[in-house]
Image (tube, rainbow, N blue to C red; front, side):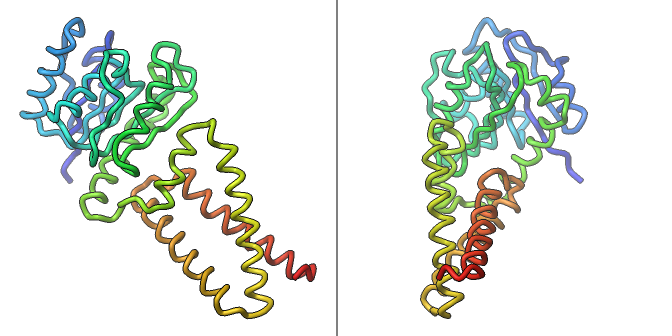
Amino acid sequence: MTRLRVQFIHGLEGSPAGNKSRALAAEFEAMTPAMDTSNFDACVALHAETVRRFEPDVLVGSSFGGAVALALLQREQWSGPTLLLAQAGLRQGLRARIPPGVLVWLVHARGDDVVPIADSRRLARSGSPGFVRLFEVDDDHALHAFVASGRLVSMVRELADARNDVAEGGSAPGRFERFVAPFFQEPTLWPVLFAAAAQAVLIGAVVLAFGLRSHNVFALGALAVALVMSGDVLIRRWRAGVFGRIGWTVVSLWLLSAISALLATRLDLF
């Protein structure tokens, strides 16, 4: 079986011998060029040439290296799956822009005291809906726990799988995902999401209870359509290996609606 080719761009004080480099090299055919981080443009040029020669499946950039990776994307010198770890692109004066149609996942620690997580939240709001994801973790800037737990390696694999699904047309984001995903990426929007979820449970319970009690064809038909659409979202996310909070939210809403409807019917509220 062919091993994934992973190109890693180390951070400001990193090196090819760092923890992330070694973790990637142990599992993949990895390339981590040493670079002089005092010259940003030279670093971008070095990795652009490495991309051309090495032809990686996935590009991973950490902190300063994340800025280099973002520059490669914005300068159209790379357009493949990209994992940005505590990216410092905005600190290097780059625009908060991910080109459309590029699969980019970001990982950033909420308590990062070197590069604020707000930078990645802002960057994650760009790009094509469904192609850009932000994972907020409880860790430090270097993401020591993230690497030690093996999550770095597993996420690279997940990103490669997601790339294959996109190529096959199997993970194109649905309207539900395009609408809901930003709420999970921006905590200040969570109250709105919770209110919407409560309404969805209430409406679903009422329609389900009414349809079951009165055998209303239209009500049951509407529920069947909603169930099929939800199932499509869940299947796509499951195949992409990114079931996550959105997937469990859909499942939870359906379960709560069903339980509420059964209780309402049993208590003869309808």
